[in-house]
Image 1: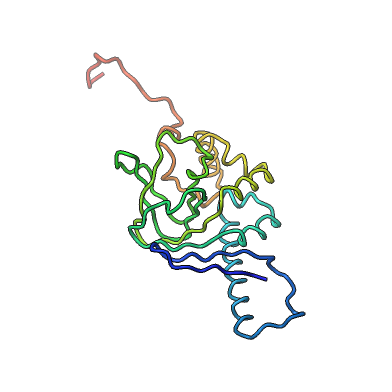
Image 2: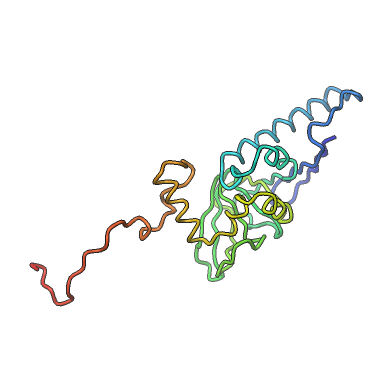
Amino acid sequence: GIEIARGLPTDGCICGFSSSFGQDISANPAPQAFQSGIHKMEVELLEIRQFLEQRPPFNLLDDEQLDALPADMEIRYLRRGSKFPPEDGYLYIVRSGAIELRDQEGEICEKIAEGDIYTTSCQLLNFRKECRGATAEDTLVYIMTCDRLKQLCKASDAFNKHFSASLKDRLKQAITAVQQGDSSDISIMSVEVGELLRMEPITVDANATIQD
């Protein structure tokens, strides 16, 4: 069957899913209220799957992997001003809301919003500075353990390459996708100006006049 773990921590609500999803329960009919709860969870799991399959790198997973993934995830609601990440050892996917990440000097180093992922806790990328922060507005996140993430990386070469590639290589891939019109999910605002220049800059001698 499907088990739900619900709690009310100080930062919001955790709804955890763990199950043999889709198991035949017709042999032991459940009360109507329970069946209604099962249906609601099926809808929630389907919504998570649909959200993931439209966003990289989860769109690189096959149907079987996507079908199984929602049941291994948790949903957490974070009120505005909640610290982020609330716990280490997890990958966070922003479903809605916004989060500001700051470095140890308090400077904003990144802002993440719907569809963005935070993997620092899983140490998949070597950041020069560890950025942590707080939610800029009420935020809903999907949570997956780092162990589950590593399993997916081992099972899918394409998925693994997304995380193992350097930041520069991933940026170039994003630019290529934008130029070819292959992805509507990648914001051009994330592209560095230097990567967009296709012509060599025009230069003149330091002693040249404006007229020259």
